[in-house]
Image (tube, rainbow, N blue to C red):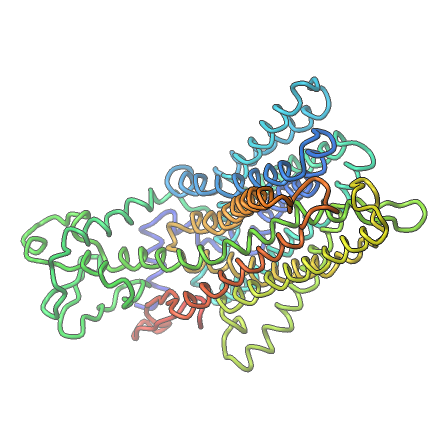
Length: 576
């Protein structure tokens, strides 16, 4: 039977697979509606986060370091809640329903945020404001792990044409997000600073409502997958089965359970050809292979005990997850560096000359839009110019591997901190020269454009690392855990924000004991440049660890029959 014929047979036995492969559903015609709801949510998120430190310090009168930690805490929690949302989506509700519920919660949070800066009495305002922020975090928890995965699901991996479209999807997806973030940073933040916070948050609320409406318009176009049950049960079964057989020595005499009532045995221990695409056996984490060995007890049993005998596919999926953990850990400092964009970068800009012409004053947070502009320019250049050129030399369909792309972005983040430290040292020296070092409200006679290099490098590093992480945690995750993969990628941002807060606390404690506070309210008297050097050093150590882990990383290897249905073909997902 040919591959196409086999797919038709599978579809007839699986209603969800049938609906998933209808030609009238999916593709860019469906994905564009998912992009709309993501654009709305990102527009709202950056409209809130981009200027949040200014609201906390000016309107709620919090200390700069306290406000920075509160911003990092909120961004961190917002990025960790998706881990919960992913489990709910994959196990119970499905991605489509989870997106609807979470977007509705997000809309409720935006409405409460509007009320907190308008009709709520001032003595209750701070409490209600933070309640609203964390309602947004809950909405983010269901929205973020599902929306990108749901959009990527609209492209059929068995269709060569749609597979190529999905290869570029992650670049253009991130480009759409950046457009939303850039417009929010330029327009909404200007409204917040020059009109009112009520109007600014009101605009964000209307956009979120419009995005949810547009998402619902595409309801008949989507390919939807039913929840597959908790993926963590299958993961736990592999560890338990391997532990129960820890005394069993793997020899050439043992058979291996491949699933679908097939076994692999003999001297080479190779997997027999299956009737569908499956994961190939790898040599890493060999201790888990014992979970699929059929010992005498398994052979004598008429019913397979899933807590004692697992399939080859099940074991290899657990290995996929384990391989991503070191990459996840070594990318945390990248997020800690990028979190400065919403905190100390903004405070730096607020002390400098921000006028453009005689009448226009640029809000300090609006310079963050340069990050978006850089990404808007570099992502199409990367996709249309760099990838085709690199492909000629490397033969790789993406020009360079996804791990190489991430690694270059990590290097740029180190460079970003070095440049930021040098510019901050220059700013403080100018303040000293003009005798305003003890006047924190005085404007340092230095143009805000001095900050452009660090914003530019920040955007360039995002182009490489963020898009690369999105692709890596989608492609290399088991299919049943792809929502969790998106959440895991987002948790890098969350944990990185917590790390940034922790470094701030440690630096404050040590520098205060030494008699010279590095991160005080008066940036002219502080040593923010020393803080940036600390981040650069920690990032360099993290990059070394990343390179070590990346060199031993094994990409997902998928086996299946070729188009003629006669021979077995192997594909390394993400590598070639």
